[in-house]
Image (cartoon, rainbow, N blue to C red; front, side, top):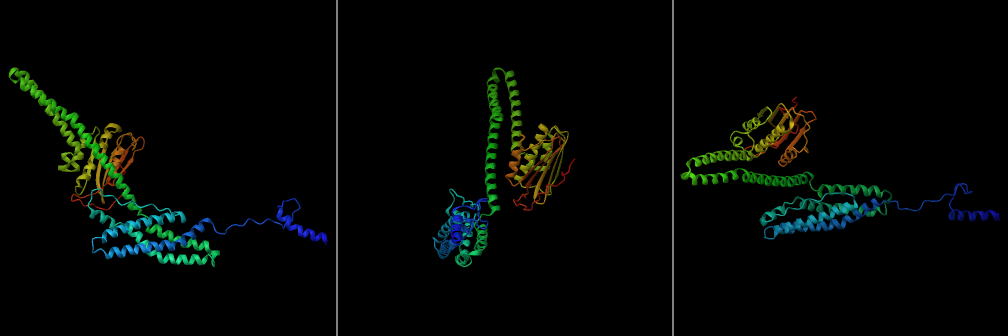
Length: 427
């Protein structure tokens, strides 16, 4: 009996002090318990912290928003009312920034920051005030702060009670409540994806248009300085020498006048070419059909031109279409090795479509050094498209799409991206 009691009292101590090693004579029922750990994960604790913090944060936002709206609206009859409301909306933007940061840390919700309001340098204060008053980000943040107070009271009460009463289902409950918070943050505190995308596109396109205009001005200045201006200077000097020799040597003066006459013709031709490069007169007078036919006659490859337009588009769209076709035909003359080509222009819904086809060697690419990338950027700056289909061995089909603007400045908002028309499927 004594030996049995000794074994029984020593058994638990041996089990605690030493691990149950297989093959060491350990009792099969004697197993080590796992170390204690928390039943809730780190993500659940962050969600609980967010739910408990909703009440004080929402209370601050609610008081701020109601105060700004009530005081600003009440004082709109005075001079300080609207500026005070604009400042309140700017402050609401900062509250929204804090809420997005809190959601990012505790809820793992990644919401992009809205674009800041543009700084109107030199603009009138009334315009800046109106821009701040109609800020959609500020108003959505105010709406978020107002409607969140009842929800924050509910989530705070339920979460605090569940910590002591419903803790077995607390992870599921916390996840469900915070999912509602995630939806609210994404719906009211995130910028409009389409609007932000269009803002970035317009900023990029504006920079490209400015750079292109500056490059065109430098090219025109260089052409005038190196071409027509130099010829006119030489012409003035020649006429001055002819004037001096008019009485002394009439025959030599007559020869110099003939040379000056030739210089005048060359200068006029250079000025005509330069004017055609800026904006051809035939395009202004007769439209795309006649202008593109004129361009086609200067191509080294026979070109068939088909223009089917019910009316003339706006001058800016017409000019872009003309210079796009002109540059594409120049590429055909220089690089394609084609025997024939065709140009089709038509209107499809609210778009002006251009298709240039040739039976050359193909292989045209945007990065091929033939100016295709510049054409694509120029069309993209006016919300256009530029599509190249040019397999090795040919044929090459290039389709350009431009928005249709009427002559009176109205835009047809309908859009057809099927890129189908008279030239599609040409063999």
